[in-house]
View 1: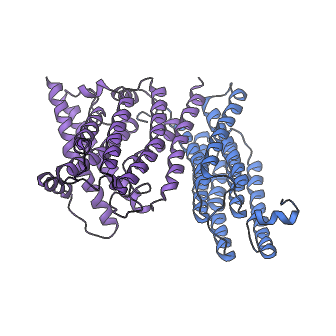
View 2 (view 1 turned 90 degrees about the horizontal axis):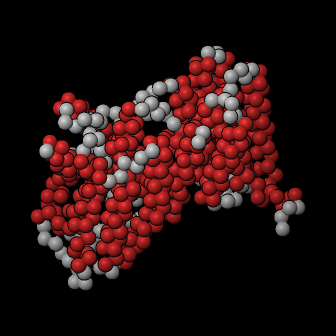
View 3 (view 1 turned 90 degrees about the vertical axis):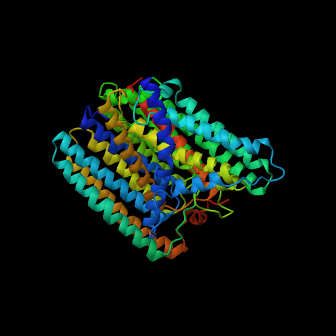
Amino acid sequence: MNLFLLELLQLALLLLAAPLLTGLVRKVKARLNGRVGPGLLQPYRDLWRLLRKDVVLAPNASWLFRTSPYLIFTAVWLAAAIVPTFATGLLLSRTADLIALVALLGTARFALALAGMDVGTSFGGIGASREMMIASLAEPAMLMVTFTVALVVRSTSLPHIAEFLLTHAVGIRISLFLGLISLLMVAIAENARIPVDNPATHLELTMVHEAMVLEYSGRHLALIEGAAMVKLLLYISLIASVFFPWGLALDPTEPRALAIGLSSYAAKLALGGVVLAFFETSIAKMRVFRVAEFLGGAFLLGLLAAIFLYVSQGV
Amino acid sequence: MPSFANPAYDTAHLLDTAVLMLSFALLYQRRLFAVLTIYAWQALFLAAAAAWQAYAQGAPHLYITAGIALVFKAIIIPLALHRIIVSLEIHRTIETALGVGATLAVGVALVALSILLVLPVTTASGALTRESLAAALSVVLLGLLMMITRRNAVSQVVGFMSLENGLILAAVGVKGMPLVVELSIAFSVMVAFIIFGIFFFHIRERFDTLDVHDIERFRGERR
């Protein structure tokens, strides 16, 4: 029963922390640009405003367009719940593994691309086609990293990976380092962050994510933006739980471990957000056609990680 | 990772990997100044690797190697190349003979090749020697690859310098490398660099470009 309550706590925490994280990234970026920037709580206000507004639907929008936001949000939220955020012993994270997580995110992306094309505007189509190009390159890289980590730990289950890395002396392996960099590149592409896509742009030539959601309004838009925020949180939690699992509560029913887990999770999220903001400010957006090279590089790094595993283990 | 079972081993690995990663970054990068910056970073990590080996092996002469790498390769050579690029007004985007994606794929194949080469030779030694030898050999091969795939003379020189970084990396990883050998490598690279610099000026003066592709027809190779 206690575990059940903790699981509900994690689900609620994901929803509550995601807009704060996005607000933090925006605030730090604004400060780095020399602006004051909106307050940390601005994303909450934006979502609340959107939720109260009416939906404006295009006359030719089908049921697909109306149901997609709910599907996307649910899939991303569920995927985020698989990641061990502050404790490893939670119920949901035991039911699915890293490959299921990739599949859930793939489902969300599929629904979003279909919805982008549904109304038949040219922007939706171009956004969907670019998103699919990015996805076709990012997913193999993500799976490659998954396989590397799975080969080290002999499991694809996330809580098991985190527990194993916490309790065993694995050492800084070349493979894990390469896998981390590969996963960081994938995370940047998947979250539509700066070198690949710009989350704040409405310039027609460079939009990817924003182009697909142009036609959305009201609560639909709120759900899609919320899903994007949760996805950012998901990737930072994923990287933190696999590569920096310090502080995770192994036994979530013990109050002290739980407190350490929660506070270290908050620290990791804040650190991840600040690092992301610094990275985004220091780099320029690349051309769409260079994204293939960028993500191809991520895939090759994942491949290298798997190759180096065989050297260090001597399998 | 969380528990540092063997810090000497782990840190050496991390530094080796960083040098290898930066070799890939050199292959990925298209702008000349960025190539120089990456090269300087690679030399910096090389110096850190050498200093760490000096500390871990208790071999003080490796500190000299680290110092040479830091002063010459991380500071003087990049700055000098920077000045050459500015003073010769070289076109600053690099033309590659092979696409960047294909080059990176060949690079990974070369890393696999060097692992396959190193593994049977070093079965007797520990995992550290094996991994750092594999990484060092990969850096050497990637430097060669960079020299082959770039048409611009400056980036070919950077490829040569990064190849030499791989040699030093291999040398510091092995116990009992005499200082004379390292000094002579460092010195010969300095000489090579000076000769390259003079060559740049002459090529530029004679042919008005540093793109070696344009020079080939003077050898009668162009179809």
